[in-house]
Image (cartoon, rainbow, N blue to C red):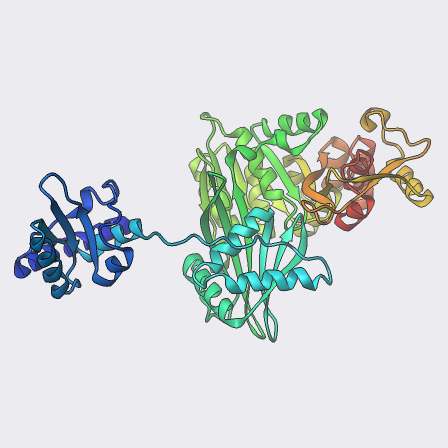
Length: 541
């Protein structure tokens, strides 16, 4: 039975009991549900303090015949009813009392005396050694009521654009950190009492146990309301027992289906054309590679969304499901509970899908099943852990060996990173000699067409971050760097074993000769456009 049906049944029982009690007390009974939220409030008949003290609500104030009415409960003292009746009768006025349920009383008293909305200071992230901000946020969290601290932290993380909340047990305090634009920032230190409340909420909402001595995974959703609008936040929860208690990481996914769009990835016309050509093909294997948190899932979902038409059957296998997309069959795979992507993939192929997305290829069995599916009339998309597109081939060969079928199935490998963008407050400067030499070396051999008019002959202009109140570290948001390797005949030769020395450098050199831009080159181009800095490219790549 749904929660609202349970509540309705409870209210029905309460109203029935109240009606029976009204007969015993010789008072008329009113079921107020038809007008609880529509009736006009009657000010100044009795004070709010008296309403609280005597469990009484005004219903009608005077009129042509000076007729007054009050709603009372079984908790209203009989002496108060008799006293008010005598007072009005002595003045020649009529007064009536009606018995209402306790639930009805609560609805009306909240209308007469609504709880005050408390506004807490917004959380600010602290830089290394910034104890003043850390102490200020810690004090704010100490003031937030225990039942609201969990929601407050999630709301604030969403407002900051954080991708993760880290709750970490130290010996004396609990450290809260948030990952904003890919960087972990300290937020606050909270005491053990707040931590227990927080973890209790997390336990009940995400379905994880505070008493477990094993790592756990959970999932929850939360509606975020801001400036009159709302959006759904998907939250993936990971907990692990440590020396001082359960540590937790909450990964926040701000779900907006309209944002899962290839047009928003900043791809060039050539890159977008390569992706369109590959994913529109009825069969083949597409791999997204990169570390955790590099946006692989978002790009895969954007590809799936581009293919999401009524004439295609699309199935995804995910652990867990991070975004719910209309029109797609999404299947959760509990790998921690004994499930496997390979087994799930074999099962869904019987449903005759056109497109299958496998959350991640982690083992040889899944890899072989995905490859087999991709040559039998299915387009298969998946993520895979490797540092670069060329490294993905070496890793896959380590996983399944030299496999001629793999060479004919794999069509596209995309390596991805997320890199912080400079805020508009950025400051221009001339590159040093060392920086200029590095840029020219990395971009050597890249055609002028790709460089889009950027000249490297004279002085090279770069930009540095400038801190402002809205961008305390000089960066604002992130952008995608993508390295796309379209599998050509030259690349297939490596996979088939036609080339004796199969290594990452050799594959990358061949791909660059065919026009591929590496992640490092894409990063340097972003620097030359003024989007980011060389230090940020170095950090990410």
